[in-house]
Image (cartoon, rainbow, N blue to C red; front, side, top):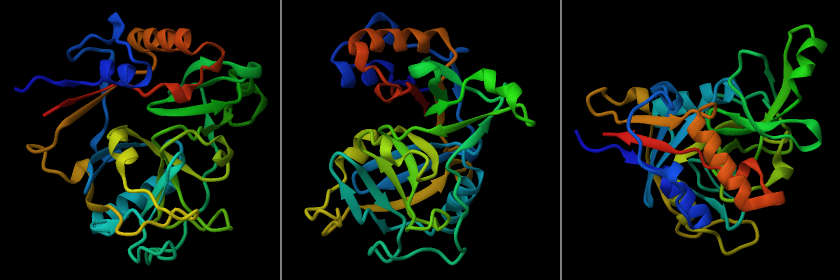
Length: 283
């Protein structure tokens, strides 16, 4: 078997230019968990491959729509029609104009979700007493645990943070008008939070997202854009051909060590957006 690709050191070196001891290569162990194939979107583009961990706990209707369209081959050979440096890269319109969609109708907005004691969540910061942390690979802002007892369902309200790599659903002025178009963040943009539904995050291939050809106009519309050549949910790939993708668990000691290292480097400017969760790929 080929040696697993370890992205711990690469993520920290890319962000801060150093590689602490905690970023040394690791083998399969309890610090890593496999991303379920049905929650892993594989996007091949003219610039390379992007792997996205989808989060049905946060946006079940939007994840269901992405799975449906990917399974239909709807996204194959669709352009990255709107790309803005320092902001995001948008695709999912078969017309390439920003006006097209699917035949399946619109999806109701999922701008927040309910987080209970059973919901995986690892806080890394507590600005104003409200925790910021991670639900799997997605950075999340939440009401604190003490809110669990205030509501009938025993849960608190949380929402995805628009950090680099976060996947959002495009829409028009009606918040319930999302259909097929989506975007990946190239930079942090908190003003989108609780306005556009978050459905996942890029776990491998953020360099590809950042390399997509950007538009010259203020609108971000791209001339001769890059293309998604094939989009598929990993569960549709034959098991014998499907790589294993393992993400570092946010509740692991290794992850907490990475957070401490980054926090020390960033100081008062520290944010969950500074953390790209390490991933291993086993061919």
